[in-house]
Length: 277
Ligand SMILES: *[C@@H]1O[C@H](CO)[C@@H](O)[C@H](O)[C@H]1NC(C)=O
Ligand SMILES: *[C@@H]1O[C@H](CO)[C@@H](O)[C@H](O)[C@H]1NC(C)=O
Ligand SMILES: *[C@@H]1O[C@H](CO)[C@@H](O)[C@H](O)[C@H]1NC(C)=O
Image 1 (tube, rainbow, N blue to C red):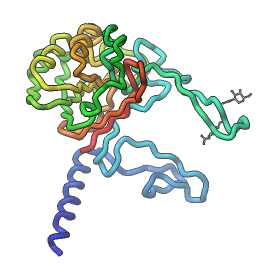
Image 2: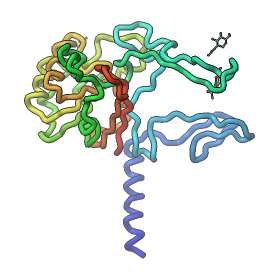
Image 3: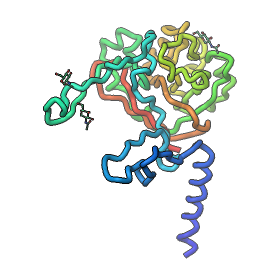
């Protein structure tokens, strides 16, 4: 009896500790006329339940670190964001079609996305180094979430100060971008924090990191846009995952899962990324 019960109790205790440590609030607040049930908010008097959108699942075990594609999501170089037309209904039941059906038109470097070597190297692009060639083993595995000092872009000095141990292959860098909520501001902001060329070089030369995650649209600081990308992508070994949603998650080690779309000939792709604690 005790043999069976004890591990269960331990698991429950651990789950409670994790849940209370990392999730601000798991309680659903439903609009009036609705009540919370196991799947979300349901309407009391029949009808269609209200859909629930959330970023934390499984009692704080799974974090969705993907930004939702929405019209006011910032987009590279734009003051208008993605705009309302990135997704459009092409067939509608209301107009007599059998089903609703939508089409999307989206830059492949929009929102939470990743870069393939062909993004900055024309000869790699021509040789076919597109997103379908990215290593799923690199994109899925243990990852370290770290906080970057807020007073600087990511330089060699900053990289050194983070003391990331050898052997760590995936790191998500949370920066001032998260504090400034830049991914929630429609207008593209060039003052975001990213890697300076010497920071990228330091990472390549002194760590085993093969996946670099960051919390705005580019891993490279605006002023070093091209140089930092060259340093990262030259070896074709490092994958850049950009515009991650790293709010309200404790620093530490998680299991990262990132899956880009399998777009032949594309040097970038939106990706759904999650952390499992
Ligand atoms: C439905 O029909 C209206 C009127 O013809 C048109 O303005 C609208 O674009 C149509 N919507 C779709 C999704 O086909
Ligand atoms: C189908 O499209 C109509 C608009 O034509 C929309 O009001 C309705 O919610 C859609 N239904 C579904 C299931 O998405
Ligand atoms: C980072 O660099 C950008 C230019 O790319 C600059 O505007 C910004 O102020 C820098 N941020 C910090 C915290 O130094």
